[in-house]
Image (cartoon, rainbow, N blue to C red):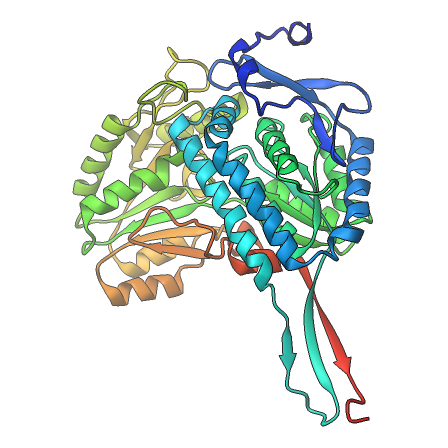
Length: 501
């Protein structure tokens, strides 16, 4: 009956997924919205409804925050060893349920099953890392300038963290944040994207099975209609001490403003416009292989995805020819469950129209599509062909905006200085990729590129161990590494005096 209300078709096959949950998770209970209203979660591959989930509002968000605040009073006093063991149990269960989690990710995000399994492995790596890191969040003892005093710096958990996650990596973006904040001794309320809430609920189910204490992890689901009011509560409620958000720069700025009212900590991982720079000394075949990974992973829907390919004029023709050939051969569009598919649908109609609009605008202004450049209408309304554009100008919107889709733009450069000038000519500063065998050039580029992360001769940059994050309008703070856990702590200075008495 629920599906009929929305005039949508049901995906019967997903009823067999044992981790599929259609209720929110607050204070250890699976609950409906206070209003009893629900909204559908659709598979972008065919628009069928996977499940209906609660359409929660501001009052539901307040209940979740209160549960997290109550639990924090005891969780903050647990030992690092205990938190480590709990995270390890959660990691083990997620590993055991990799295939089940991957099926849910593919169902709601559209990415191919192999990529979904890769996301689960990536997401699990953060739980494993922070299970270890929990026992290494250390303070300092500083030499005192006074003979009878001792200076101590200790790290204490912030409190309740509002976690707002995107749709492109619906499982990994949760574990990367929640693993870190739990290791630090914090509790949280998670609001996943309205497009992909089922991965978050599955993660919560496994956390419950792993024995994560009641109230530490709370998941609220909400439609686009209620998202602004829920987000406002999650940023402004007095019990919330930090807002951790991954998503667009525009939304990040809004949340940053709301957080300012309470002078709350923010951890913002925002949009990018990554350059992919190839110099003549580079191994061209290797650079092409890495270009495919950097551009077409998750069908281009990644904040660190390469957008602007800056290719030296000496090797431009060879690179473009090889890139065109690889795209034509290796980018296989289709539903994520179909064998051999490497690129699924875009997440929703809005995203599909944005990508298409950017390409059409560029072509109307002189760009040329060597491959792709249109929808694969025979597959459905959200399938956009993997595209390679040449004759792109720096003034075009497709060059200055984050594409977030399967479109690569190529521009010819003549020098290192020109590459740097073009690469840095953006308000974004998340990731950059450089291909060269010149060691001096590699260090110069790393030093002068205005980005938080630089990969030399590699197209995959993220892992649990390094610090992930950007500069300029690409965000504040770092995720992963020990720095990711320290984001959720306050430094307390204690002066111990009269020690000679």
